[in-house]
Image 1 (spheres, helix red, strand yellow):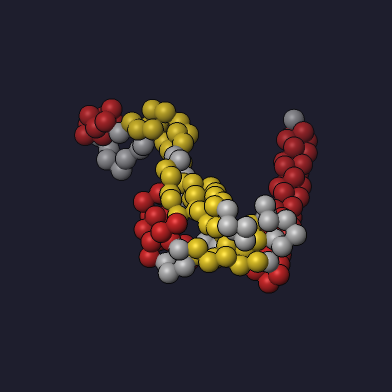
Image 2: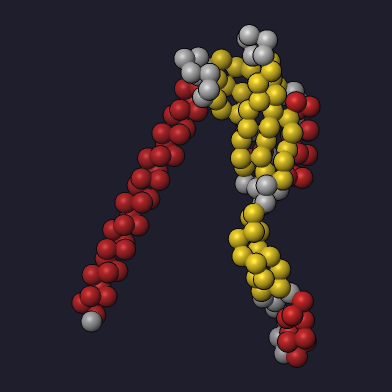
Length: 149
């Protein structure tokens, strides 16, 4: 029994190591693509006024009980009021711009951040850059590095 358990544990550790390597590789590849787009792509400056932020939260678990630091009878009394839906805060950014053919185009990006915070940070920025692949204008990168500040 211990032998089987140790084999399973070793397999889980090997899978974990491989997943970390794969994640690291994909992250590096993504950074390389973004760097290439920034260096070689076509840059479009978009005003924050041309951005719309849409709330796109999703409920992960309904009736989730949020534990408290209160113990004893008070805890038992308040426990029934501490049940809420566990949500994942997400937003969708939609921005409009005019392309080189004078057509109005819309770009979207899903992002895991509260929509109020995202909208405030977008409004505080002066200009937002979007980088397009010159050979394939359907591939683009919306530079949101200002969100880290």
